[in-house]
Image (cartoon, rainbow, N blue to C red; front, side, top):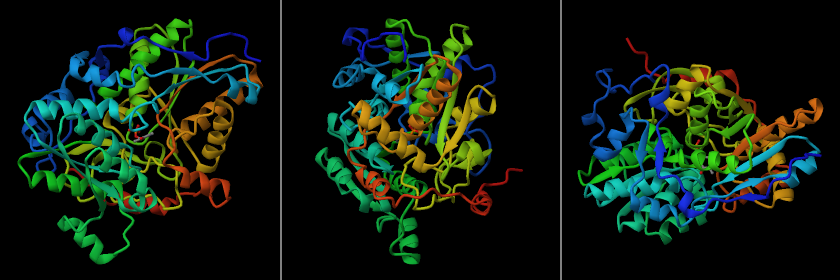
Length: 456
Ligand SMILES: *Cc1c(COP(=O)(O)O)cnc(C)c1O
């Protein structure tokens, strides 16, 4: 039905790979609110972040420079899988019988199988350059832990990972991957930290959460002056590293003379979404295009659509600086029924800010619609998506079907930010009919919101 003929894959040569990351902050009409010190509630300074991050990343976190050069060593490692392909989802379009044209930027070609190595590699690089020999981190679905394990292996660094217990049990092969690259993996809550021990004493089968695993990884980092901590999403420098996705996609769409009408991305902590969307927001602010930009989150963990825009902690124990973000409350733990990933209680402060400013939209979708979209996608395009981007695919399909009704031939762009080869248990639950949608009750949100600090 769609008429315009484009190649199936739009590829860039290695020599065409962008050599700078883009910093959205430089172009925002209203600057985003600063992080606050958890004790004084004053804006947090570099010294507050110094026990956790190397100085180069702290500078990137607060910089207002528009572009940051990607170090040559990082570009060399990026070339193991970058530039990543942009695909036209023609076979999916045909199945949907839509005049819309759907493009997806595929990040599952990376060693870890997702977009996470785009920031794991520079984070390991800057720590290594400042003489750090060991990193600590958390991982939920396992994508971030494996990305950082791959990255630290490039520099012979040590890595200790706290993997959310439910995921540690359900995804043993993610642990194996991390171990192949040399990392040590703990189930979280763990016996290694005081916070972990206190939670296990209450419940030896504790399922864990991302916020708890962050608390454990931060505690172990702070206790060891030689170690630093790495975060796989949420922070400004992480989203900036991911902008290589959007910069490449801009070049690729230009090659086929396409301008997007709609960008959709799944949002957990906001990094793959920001990575794809921010360079397009720059073009939109400059008047070069006018796409609608939409975040898609799970109905079971809807921080943007049902959370509040408040200062909250990034972790469950309340150890991190306070970040102004859309939050469900740092004590929020998504119901175990939810299999679709994106389980973090908060949202990147930058994505929260642009949402608050009305520069992007947000919707929440239930998991069965997401997996239904993923099956349609896998049957036509071949790739089995990670559970997280199924949210973006479901939103893209909604739009493509609306185009079928209206006859509009919109150009839809999304990030297929990972493959789901190690997430087949979630597909199994869907195919066997065990997966149910979960209506998050208001009481659960209200209860967790009580954990958000009230600032005077
Ligand atoms: C980690 C991860 C996410 C969620 O994190 P964002 O920062 O929101 O991108 C989404 N998809 C995949 C494949 C991931 O690995």
